[in-house]
Length: 261
Ligand SMILES: [Mg+2]
Image 1 (cartoon, helix red, strand yellow):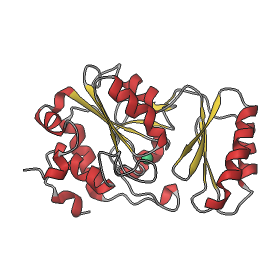
Image 2: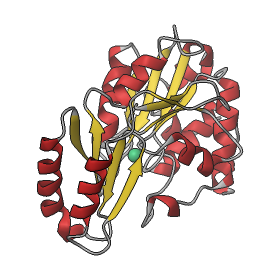
Image 3: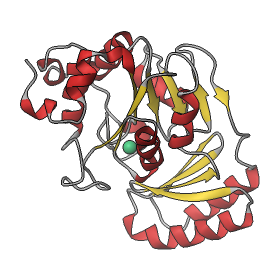
Image 4: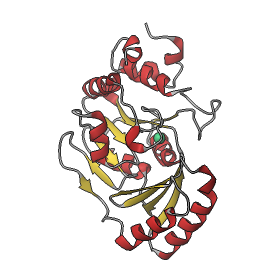
């Protein structure tokens, strides 16, 4: 039996009964994993890798990670598991688990990256992460610098055509215009094993919103995780551990798998 908290998530019973008609899209940071002082400092409990691997089997491969991270970075976190993954907000993707990563957009221009690195010097603790088509500026260790960073980064973006500044959880990201986790979801839903299924997207942040909406527009569900962006009242999951137990239940794993770390 699943507990009531787990079953309160929309469509839980339908998905448990017939996983073959559903596809899962899951954000990583703040959804599956707790935030850390730096992106490479997150802790990945072995149970999370086990849950993802089992989910991929349960859903016949129709499980994708959708992240602001690069695909190779996500691979490092969950090694040796390699799921279908969309990286850097839909600008790169690996469709076949274990296959090649495709860049859907060229690398960010060096002049853009250099300008961002220069601006990041305004406060100690600001971390610039170059990632494929995008650049992320993490200010979680320099919260007081946010307004100034945002102002300066907006000026830089204004100088380069076809880029947009997107705020996230203690991060400001410069991403090519027209790409998002929403475009990634719609794109994956056009091919097997996702095609013909109903998408469920789980996310915790502003960058997940296009994919939460895309899932709902495609007849599925956008499920929100409470945190710094979504309030408890507007969320389907009250915590990351709630997400993990729900996914464990979908994967047919016992609820205590999450507690075992
Ligand atoms: Mg997130």
